[in-house]
Every structure is written in C-alpha cells, then in structure tokens.
Amino acid sequence: MVADNDLAEAASMLAAAGKVAVLTGAGVSKESGLPTFREPQTGLWARYDPQKLASLEGFRHDPHLVWSWYMYRLGLVSQASPNAAHHAIAQLESLVPEVVVLTQNIDGLHQQAGSSRVEELHGSIRRFKCAADCQGAPTVIKLPPEALQSDRAPHCPHCDEFVRPDVVWFGETLPGDVIDRAFTAAATCNVMLVVGTSGVVQPAASLPFVARQYGADVIEVNPQRSEVTRYASIYLQGSAAEVLPALFAALQAQRAGAG
Ligand code: BV8
Image (cartoon, rainbow, N blue to C red; front, side, top):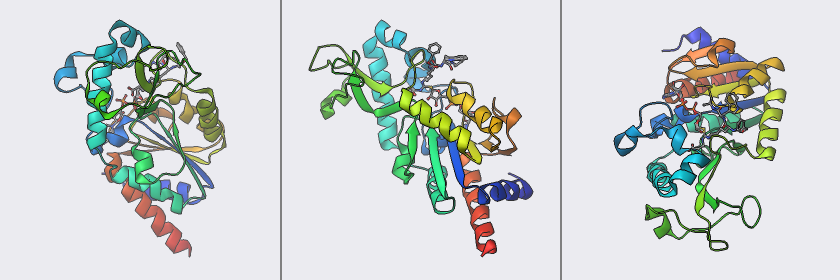
C-alpha cells in the first residue's frame, strides 16, 4: 500500500495545479478485466505477439487473423465497464480547473466514466475505416452488427479494400492533430499523472519526459516500476483502482481543509 505521506504530497501537487494531464496505458483498464499489452495474452491469442498483430504488416499478411483478434478484443471491451480508476480520473475534473486525459487505450472507458476531454492517442476499437482511406483520411465506415461477429475482415463499400479498426498500429504515425494537442498538454500542464503504462511505446512514452522538461511534476501510479519511474517526482506503487480513489480522497480532504 502507498505511504500516506506520498499520497498527501501527490494530493498537494494536484491541489495546487491549474492544469493536470493524465497519461494512461493498458494498466488503467486491467481492473475492468481487459488484458494489458505486455502481459501474457490468454487462450487462443497466447501464441501471438500483440505487437505483430497490431501492425499494418500483420494486417497485410493476414487481414482475417488480425480482424478476428480485434473482434475478440472488441467483445471483451463491450463487456467491460469503467473501474474505480476511470471514475476517479473523471471526478478529478470537479477539483482541478483543467484536466485532459491522454490515453494510449482504444477501449473508450474514460469517456464512459465521464471524462470530458480525452485524446485517444492510438485511436478507437469502436471505430472502423477503409484500409485505403479511399474517401479521405480517415474514411470511417459504419458496419452492420453481423460484421462484428464475423472472423472475416469486411470490404469497404466504396472501393472493396478491406475495412480495419481505426487504431494506430506499430509503424504508423499518430494523427497529427492529436499528437500536437498531446504534446501541448504535456508542455503546459502543472502536473502529469501517469497511470498504468510501461512507458515503452513512442511517441506517447515521451510525454512525461516533456512535462518534466517544462517544469511539471510527474506522479506515476503503477504496481511495477516502468520506464517512467526514473523521472517521476512521486511513484505511488499500487494498482490504479486502489491508488487513484485514495489519491482523489486525499485531494478532496485538502480542498475541504482549504475551505
Ligand atoms: C510512430 C493501438 C512514427 C493498437 C498501440 C522511437 C524509439 C523506439 C521505437 C519507436 C520510436 N518511434 C516509433 C517507434 C516504433 C514504435 C514503438 O514505440 N515501439 C516500441 C515498442 C519500442 N512506435 C510506433 O510505431 C508508433 N508510431 O511513432 O510513428 C514512426 C513510424 C515508423 C517508424 C518510426 C517512427 C505507433 C505506436 C502505437 C502502437 N499502437 N495501440 C491496439 O491497441 O491494438 S500501442 C499499444 O501499446 C497499446 O496502445 C498500449 O496501450 C500501448 C502501450 O503499452 P501500455 O499501455 O504501456 O501497456 P503495457 O502492457 O506495455 O503496460 C501495462 C502497464 O500497466 C505495465 O507497466 C503494468 O505494470 C501496469 N499495470 C498492470 N496492472 C495494473 C497496472 N497499472 C495500474 N493498475 C493496474 N492494476
């Protein structure tokens, strides 16, 4: 469990902050029942490397395999609900003037929990597009429910190319507007709260470093040390669903104490 004085120190950083950026990774959705990226995949997918499947090369090599993996994950996401960590992050908006969530996750759980400003750095598993963006980038395609039950990648109604999830794969660039807003948030926040990421995937993993460079405090929440820990101002060791409600309660208490 996290030491009370670390929680109190982190809460006082948040209490003094006008703008907080919250960078999240797969760990924040772990307690919603969604597997993280680098922990062993379960069942059928245990023998596949997510980094290979989450790539344009993987899709080109076997579009139906990659499509099936995303439909499997979409099934898990559809059953999942936001956990206490997502709710605490959403409630932060009632205590901090400006909060922006920068998520690497594609599950949409921050929005479901009520966060009003969410930048999806890596896209969304709930949105689909033509693999050729034949009508312009992105060519979003509405799919009938039966397409989501199929293990065969559907075809674009305009050009017959395959349809794919509207996510950013390894080797693909993030949408320019999204990455600009994310780096601006990192450069202008007073505190960056980093939750549940191993801090290895670029360019998202550079955001906490940029925040530190611009003078922000970085608070990390993770049961294990990560690539971010070495330059965090405070490292709160524990799971997101345990630590974040406690951090939010400590912040509320400080706000109440401040009158
Ligand atoms: C790009 C969408 C330009 C799809 C994903 C610079 C240096 C080195 C490499 C590169 C570089 N620039 C680009 C690269 C290549 C690559 C990259 O970073 N590779 C890494 C692996 C070295 N980056 C890219 O390709 C990016 N594109 O930069 O474009 C370019 C292009 C070509 C060549 C060069 C440059 C695009 C990256 C986006 C990939 N798409 N997702 C999908 O989801 O299916 S990334 C994928 O990894 C997920 O989004 C995931 O969220 C993300 C990051 O992983 P984490 O979220 O951190 O998850 P992970 O499992 O790793 O860790 C979970 C953490 O949670 C752990 O720390 C664990 O301890 C913790 N945890 C567990 N339980 C809990 C918990 N925490 C809290 N509570 C708990 N209960």
